Image 1 (cartoon, rainbow, N blue to C red):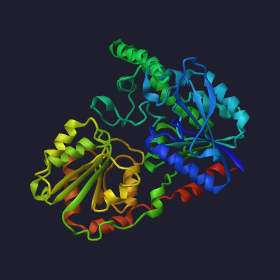
Image 2 (cartoon, rainbow, N blue to C red):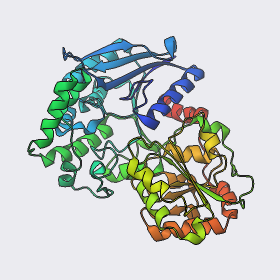
Image 3 (cartoon, rainbow, N blue to C red):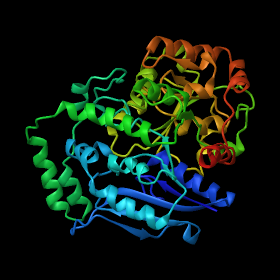
Length: 454
């Protein structure tokens, strides 16, 4: 039985890592069922203590004794990576954490280390491959960490002036987002919240001299470390692979490996609405009320939609709206314009199918290169065709130009929506061309090709 260390910055039972954390739990469950591997899980960058000693401790998990779980305490690199310039500098220069992890590797003696990101680690950890050439280093790329210290190729997300970073300008990187206080974040996470928040407040008023070369080194050194140390790099979509290749990742180590999902086991492969010509025509936005996810673009489209089509459309918005008073007010202001508008405060795996059962068309209007949106996979699995922007991996699931529009293009979005509304047979055609979703068992068979390759 081979030993494998699976790394993710979020805890194995955590929720802050969003879709990646869900994937990790599904992957571990599948590998346990597979029976060929002893699983050791490691996370980092979240837990800090007053004594500041960097160490690895064993922790409990919901898998009980079926896996062993460990956490790095007081990592010099806070997760997620985009905390501050100081955090990025620690990522590039720290040499203490690699020594601690090297000792951990010797004790565990794994056959494989499967990195599902590198956040919470310093770059020197990848260079441990030189010490342990017999161990397979595999890196699954779920975000754009190697290319972007913001990890999503999206500029100024927090201040609402986003655009896609489709070419590299390191001066832009250095001024991309409001950076948190490195020390303040550590203080808060170690329990000293009063001092931590005070430091964060002071940090906002401080004048920072940004070293632009730091961001150039961030990308170039990361790409070099991947090329020199990883046996396989697994991109979650062809678009992710394309962007990594363009940035310099070696062609002979990078492969597309679509993630497996539990919902793929029950994929309908047909519209969930039995009569696609039924009325009203139901569209749904499911996900986050965020600029990069295209929520505000979608809301703008609802406000601009002509009455001749809107009066026959029922809109379902399924997204957490705590603290979003202005957004909720804008939604309610549209109630007389549409056949009906319903808003739901998010969803769970237990009620998602029920929420989607009457939906003709899902809207996934992302404005960034969203690697492979989990919500797109889920909607297709439950029998909901999706209209998606041309950015990221979602369009690879459609494989049908009738369901893809240019991101943030108002006219093309309206044209495609009306075209589908007026030609409902397209909803049936969607499933004739859409990509077969990958089950977790199929994904594990694929990933074993890289685990076991000599």
